[in-house]
Image 1: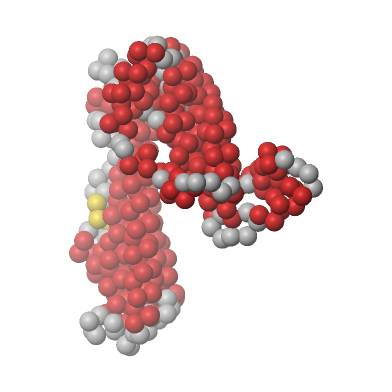
Image 2 (image 1 turned 30 degrees about the vertical axis):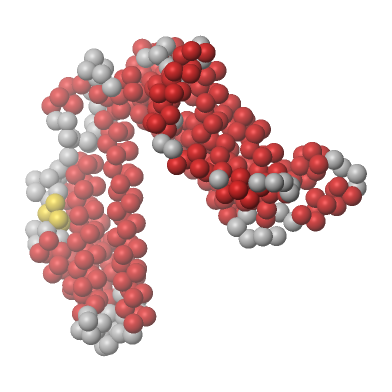
Length: 400
């Protein structure tokens, strides 16, 4: 353990591991983007990464020289990235990207290290920076690779998919013909109607959830009644029962009452799954609001409902925005209940419509286009409103 804590051992080790991770990441990215046979070279990644880590001990200048030598060696076929018979421009981009990212990461992770013995704090800080970088790449890849495959597949035609299903590069010379699957989706598969159905079902779910959860959360947070503590702690107990266990009883009950295969039935059951989490989020936020403000309103002659409407709700807009966004995402992405209760194609939600495309009679590019249409709107909404969600989730964490 003492040897590992020597800077001349730790820095080359960090550089070697980081360079191999970068070479693997660049190889995967270029293979998906160009269809070329890119792969990392474990031996050369260790050699060049060790040299880069050792150079980083002495500053950015020596590290930059080592990275430039790594890129040059890669062009000569002796670098951490093996390009096979890839196009020259792609190979050059791969070597430069590998050297650049390896340089930036290694210099950052080796910051504060010296050739001699390292303190425990210095060694652990460098290790944490390395693990953070590797973890970031890993989780970004988990998210981006399936989405990239989905989008690229939706832009291909049937002949290209049959020729090589694993080639995820696209021919941009096709122009607008790349989006042919999307046109067919809205023209032949009625996806415009499904998009509208999912939108208003999700909005109705948000409205109904807020109508029930706001007074319920306020009562738990502010009023005193028998069983209040037990109710507060048991709000999320419904999530201990898997929805698949409730599927058959819900199906039977809705069939007997005529609510199956109706939008009304869907709008009635969705809030059942979202109200508990909304109650839990809002009651924590309401507890964090200063009670003195509401008491002042009551002393001025306002009723309890007027206090909620004129004082509590305006102060709770960040929490209401975050709850609304969260509930909207749950309703938009819900599949099990929609699949179980809806049989009429004219009232399908997007998730149910995408499942209907999973057939041997429907080309794979149309299925992937449907998945993109179902994913992209909620992704845009989340990215646009994410700051409100973050603010609402954390605003009630500190009282007053």
